[in-house]
Length: 619
Image 1 (cartoon, one colour):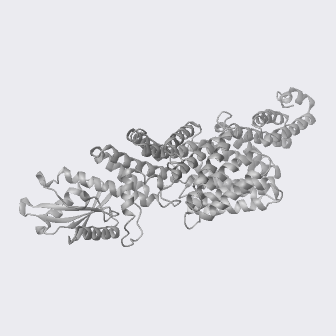
Image 2 (cartoon, helix red, strand yellow):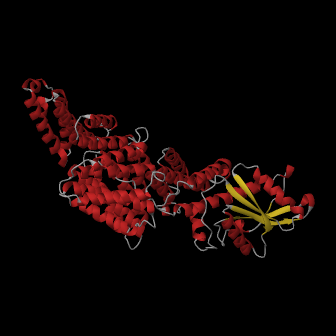
């Protein structure tokens, strides 16, 4: 239970663009790329609507009326444009409008002309969104007349049309945001999600069910990315609720493609949230969702989508396998990843191939840690190094950081089984590299995970070297990890790091005079066992019980306290029962340590040995 695998779960934007309303926009947007825009600032929490002066608008009366109407809406930020968009041709007008929108970083530009004069004047308006293509549907490309109602209020038709254009703007903006795989997006997404929520709440009821479900799906994906990167659970819960709402529209009978896509996306969100929770209910739900998706996403019909869902299924099976004493789920995960790689080849989809290689490495590492020999671990290192050939720091910095972390774990596990320190030193280098991009400010939980793993590598190095410098560095790394890995937020991760902190403190305690560090280690192990229970994570519980036994034995020997030696024996026995039942290679450790504790107890006092409740049990 010394390490954890980084959550590199690369869910591609390809799954999002297949929503009907989005796909239409993507097909058309792909045909046009106007002037390059300057870098966009963080997404605002309101839609930016620019209003150009209207041709034939006496005294700019209707220009001011339109602005006044728009300013009454709290989620519209109005920008007046002090010139007209010439109507020489509709296509040229939209092209000019798009250029201005990109420069202003606005969502929609309203432009057009006025027919008539005085109280009878009627605006004829075009609504252009920033990424709207040249070849728009006719109803979006031609102007519409909007007769004013009483008190200069624009008619409901205008607001419905505006909400439709804003919805399309949301969908095309989402394609741009989410296609930037492996990069930090959490600073932009809160503004984006606020806008989409507002649009759904105020105008969603007027859309047809499919348009509403498409928009809910985009919001759900944005919330998933937000929760994944900022470490907060609430966006993930909201995302799950939205996907479940989408499934009321996208049924398997009427919309099998969209139903399967939504099941896949629901599964990935359940996986991330389930990984943070102590139980396995969410993870089991994710397995159900992915298996459901595969009923429609068959290899024959949609090979790449099938492979993507196989990859996702492998991820959640890996998560479940890490919590179970057997290896069945981990073996299933390896099968799923290898199946995915049959279609997701490097030549065909290099980034997806790299992501799946990474995930295969995770499953192989978890298996290798439970088996004798190094074959699985060597395979994992090969998989990670292959993935890093395509996942470069420049292209996908967060993905690169996650893979560096995972490579470090495999190297560390190999180093633990080999003489010398070369592999362990390589692991430290990999973890430190991961922390350069996976910072606390960007991805706090991933940062904490890597700090935890760095601490473990330093502990293993420190145990092989004289002095205490590496061990002290390990304690610092673990304490840093616990600042984000809190018991309330991620109870099992908190327990894992408490265990690892205990290991480093115990190693320090063996080398120093006094008992302070050993006593701190006992406290850390006992804390870990409060969340890492036998029912929840039996293997982790067994390892921590064994570690607590070692700490009690060491403390008992230093203090000549027979009661502490006696207290260690049932800890070893409990660990041995679980590990031996799982055929875990580590089952020999509690046997060895129990024998040492029994010998020390007998040497201390034969009477104390006979009176110890765990004496016969441990023997």
